[in-house]
Amino acid sequence: MSEDHPIFEEKAWGLNSKQIKLTRLARKLGQEKFSLRAAHYDRTATFPTENYKDLFESGLIGVCIPEPSGGHGADFKTYMLTAAEIGRYCGATALTFNMHVSSCLWSGHLIDTLDIDGADREKHNVSREIHYKRILNEGAIYAQPFSEGGSAAAGSSTFQTIALKVDNGWIVNGKKIFASLSGHANYYGTLCTEISEVAGTQDRMNTTYLAIPANSEGVSVEGEWDPLGMRGTVSRNLIFKDVFVPDNAKLMPSGVYHKAAKRWPHMFMTLTPAYMGISQAAYDFTIKYLRGEMPGTPPVKRRMHPTKQIAVAEMRIILEQTKGIWFQAITEAGPYPSRESLLRAWAAQYTVMENSNKIAQLAIRTCGGQSMLKSLHLERLYRDSRCGSLMLPWTSELCLDMLGKATLYESGERDE
Ligand SMILES: Cc1cc2nc3c(=O)[nH]c(=O)nc-3n(C[C@H](O)[C@H](O)[C@H](O)COP(=O)(O)OP(=O)(O)OC[C@H]3O[C@@H](n4cnc5c(N)ncnc54)[C@H](O)[C@@H]3O)c2cc1C
Image (cartoon, rainbow, N blue to C red; front, side, top):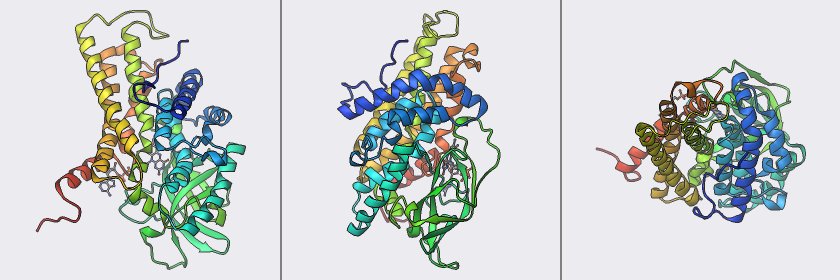
């Protein structure tokens, strides 16, 4: 089997040595292992457990754990490039990997580059080691259930999952929907509203991020999971009923999540690499198929038709546009972005999430009827690609909303 070329040609896009090493590792795992299992997870809507064993054994499970703590110390951009390579071969693995990695990226690189209180930082640097050790030594998997069905995940109201402060920890009550990795993660990195008394007032500033052990009493998983795409994510509902969570469960100091969301907004782009990878995969499929080189299909060439050539040219243009804006956005990501940079991040998010589906649609139209049979992976790419624009808080709709408003109004400006 010949090795796939990188999504971002290393020299042309100026990848550094860590980015080259990690993207190569992810691509090798993806091509040799994940691509062979992806159809099974999709067909059965089951979690990619075997892929996570590979991620653990290869060390990628700790990709964003800082180097002094034993991880690869990938920063935001390095992680995004690495995860995109995984997304090419199994979208569900890349998307769930994002939920897992965010617990390390946000508690690591993000906090390290934010100005927070010195005492909070000191305490946090000690407590995050607990999570990092579990991941590196035991292969612990972290999920990231935020969504509740209301407007909290979009950032417009408080989370209704409540963490009541008690001696040595919290009592958590609430319900999360679309909790990817449900029933498979060892810890649920859950956004809750922290209160100190039962009738306490709720404030978004009091959002806290707790790693709730999956085997705690009072944690249960419910509901069916039979969706259109991203079926291997197993995103069912999670119920927390009087769950006691110890003090060391904190993934961020109190109140920091809300600040991070405002000061490091690119953090919400971590849902895009899965779809960047899918865009590349749908394009790659089309080239192989039209050249008559798709394994499992007769060696029939279709490339000589001018309509096919034009469609491939269109796909290439959309792919290059997508890669260009995405690469720029992940390159300039960091704390306190300029207004221009933030607007570009929304445009990049929208572009990746919409274009992955556009490229997959064009791929099916161009390759033709046989290409959408379930024996080939294009139809999975097509279904998976449709899910990207639904991910809160930066859904395609909300990106349009925010971009339109921010373009026409200066900060604080109102109409009479
Ligand atoms: C495959 C998959 C995996 C997922 N995994 C996770 C996960 O691991 N963790 C997690 O927390 N969530 C996860 N989600 C959930 C996702 O982030 C959204 O929360 C979910 O898709 C929202 O669905 P809904 O029908 O409740 O949307 P609604 O809240 O009803 O929103 C529908 C649409 O309305 C718009 N909208 C929503 N709120 C507002 C608002 N305040 N103002 C203006 N417009 C708004 C948005 O465009 C949104 O797409 C996953 C979703 C999918 C599809």
